[in-house]
Image (cartoon, rainbow, N blue to C red; front, side, top):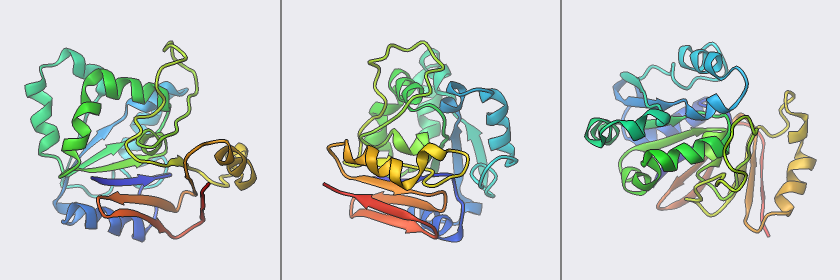
Length: 221
């Protein structure tokens, strides 16, 4: 398994170095696919997708200097023959999964068939999550509710045995103060990583590593 679960993208050199280490090659020699699906679950999603792709919003992610960059829209995959998109995934060095609504993203991960492919795919391809794109790989996810999915729809895929709470102490999200996130973490049965936008969690078969130039905390039970 090769996961890099970020709060806000490739926000500093240590996180960038972690991407390179997981891929085993420079970013300038690597191919990437961007999954924008979760962003459509929040307001002005279409415009946010455009800005993430062209690098005018947030930290570097798509505009990081990849050798090639493509889009993988999960909502389209159920109507496309698998032989058209699975080889594309298998030949990709990094899968960049954007933020937004965890529940919406989890639903389309499952409906598209990508969720069942991930365990095998991630032996080679590096999964780089951003916010909700990171959270869905853990035991805990959230929702904005700007969709018509049933309330009982899964909010995460649970591929790793911890919860992740991004955007720690971020001014735009006052509810994400350390005090509030610690209270939330205390209600969950699994360990929780609280991470700010300068922090990521690196997960491999060898274990879990915090990659940070910022602030983070592990809340364990």
